[in-house]
Image 1 (cartoon, rainbow, N blue to C red):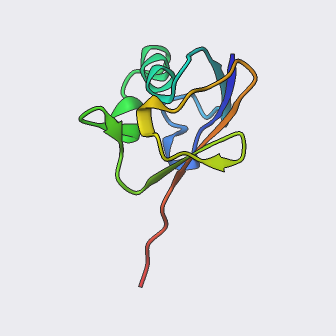
Image 2: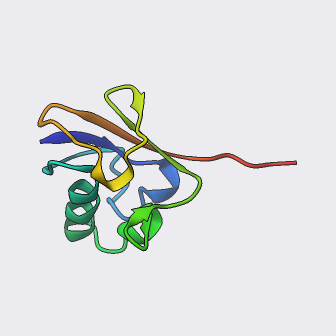
Length: 87
């Protein structure tokens, strides 16, 4: 299973867990399985079957450009990183 790191502002859904193990062959499957384990989390990660705008997905240290279709290995490390805005 992939190691998935949850952003601080979304840890409410995971019972304050920073890291969880989730199965899936693609980022889309990972997000769907996260939502099964932690209902409501998908609404903060995806919209209309696309990665939520302003959210970076890092798989094994690389920014993904394939979105929900990005392949994931069993030993992958996945980080969801929300953008930071200010002024």
